[in-house]
Length: 93
Image (tube, rainbow, N blue to C red; front, side, top):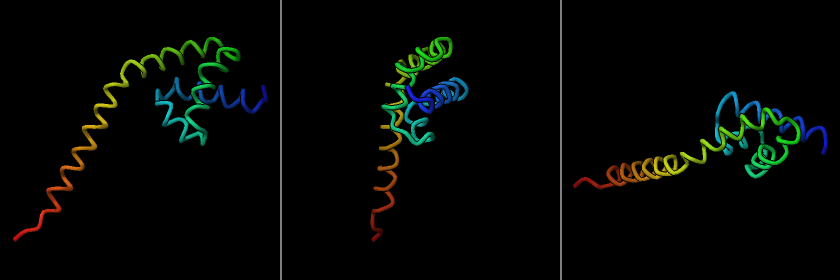
């Protein structure tokens, strides 16, 4: 494994533990795909730093457990915005 991959993996792992942000958000901030972030955290990190990997695993499991709530919130937010657009677009007269 290349050194830059090891460094990125450790940086991402530490960042996740500090901020508890989602994989998607971290991927955007680090300029890599969410698949890369997920692979770094679940496959590469346990080989590099098992202690950090166990902390990361707990956070990822928590995110997985509450993802249905986040999805519902996103849908609610989406349709709330759509409804407000419809009420603004009605012509008066």
